[in-house]
Image 1: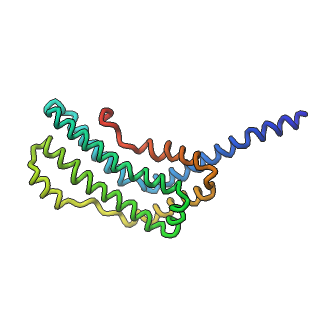
Image 2: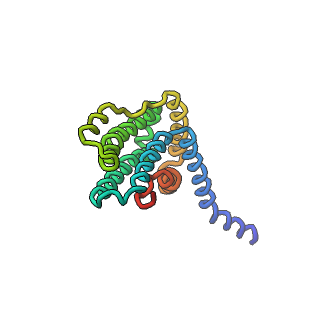
Image 3: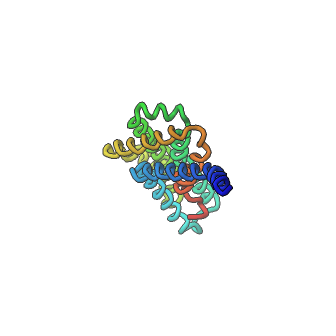
Length: 207
């Protein structure tokens, strides 16, 4: 009878053991991606954007309510555009068809993603956020800002970063493939916890 009870207890706990193993392995895959530097550029852009918000808010009493609304709105659009980067990678890992495409050319995938990130930096940060800050906080004219933006470029992608990022990405994709759709909810929760939440931009009120 005791053996029957032990066997029953083991079987009842077995799914939870497997789930815990899946979570741990999924987290390790996400950590490997971040350790390889997949988010280094993203973190730099986030820190730069949040720094200017902090500078603006330090002197917020000097600005009109309309200017504060403009600055706050520009920050929100810019932060959401940058966050699309981390959301898109999460969605790619959860999509079996996209994972298959990634495995065919992993270095190409990494390069395209980082190019998209730099495109966001150019389109939203340099073209929208920075000019709005400069016009409101520094009193620069729109014409001067347009001229300055035309000379700006997003930083280049470090070539030496591509290979290690591709290796870490391939390992994550392989892991997600092995788990398959049966563990999709668990994998999604891990990505939300370890990939999305820690790397979102801070809310305006929290800066």
